[in-house]
Image 1 (cartoon, rainbow, N blue to C red):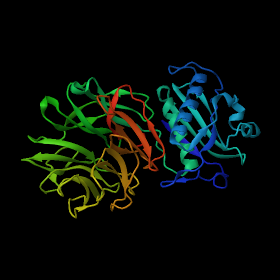
Image 2: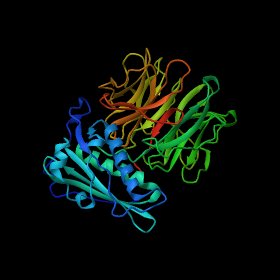
Image 3: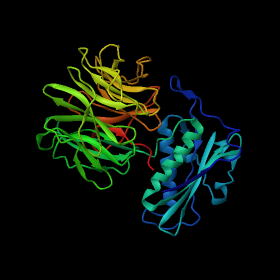
Image 4: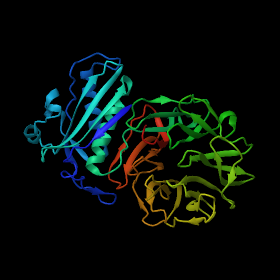
Length: 434
């Protein structure tokens, strides 16, 4: 996808970020109008007519912005039809009449070269000024990516937060009764579109994890009743065991540069954390304490690893240097702590707290500021969005029901269920797509 963007001269002089922070949440969602994107000529393409694509692009942008919690899109029955000249010259009084504070307009044009050009413009209705603009040249099949990129541009410009809509989620797709459940690795866009299965369900799979470069995943499989960590190349579909070992390997996760994987290996009744190059080789042992050490997750600069251990008598969180030195406990609240993941920003660690239920929480890397974000019966396995503000996790209902994917922001106020065609667990968020 070819990408270009530019900001109007007035962008820094007008509309500031929407009010909100990681503690207090959103104080006033912005009213935003996103009319259908017109086309200079309605041309048929393998993805549909350009006029229809323009309607769908606007709908994807609207859904992204609404789901972020920062925006309140104007009802579609109040939206005006936009002509091509109006894309770059908005009718500000008309949009003000429907209560829009901001306006997203654009167009869809068939490029004649097997590709689409999609323009995206952001305006401040009150100030009657242009805030930002971007253009995308995409293959016909990638028009949704252009819509997500447009939503990311609007979101980042108006909130001051990083982008995250143009990303993907890998997870364990679950189907069938609880005592005979089929589990497959699946991947989809973060809004549930472009869903596909990567494995066939012939063996149990767990804990898929995206590489920071977005090119591969690692996961645990019980293929041939031998629990092992596998490497899966997303472009080719080729997979292989990560470590040739007679011992059980599990709980893999990449280093920030995608060159290494930390994982756990159970040897003679003791489980420790190891590191190995993605290309293979002899694992390097990082922990050496009686008990179970697992769930390693790197800090974004690669200098430290957070992990869980029962060395104190219950599951708690610990931090160590990347070489295994200076191991120290950071969780001291009630109950036990598991499945830690370091935020891409480096400022928080997400975790599952167990005690009277399973809850998603966050704390600072030194263990301070611990707080819970969810309050359901069984929420677990947090995974951060690329911008470090939103967390995916899975929720299991009481009884024999299938689990589902959810997201929550770091305020704990914006929670929503993610659409999946079957039950879903163990999510892992990808980086932003290239």
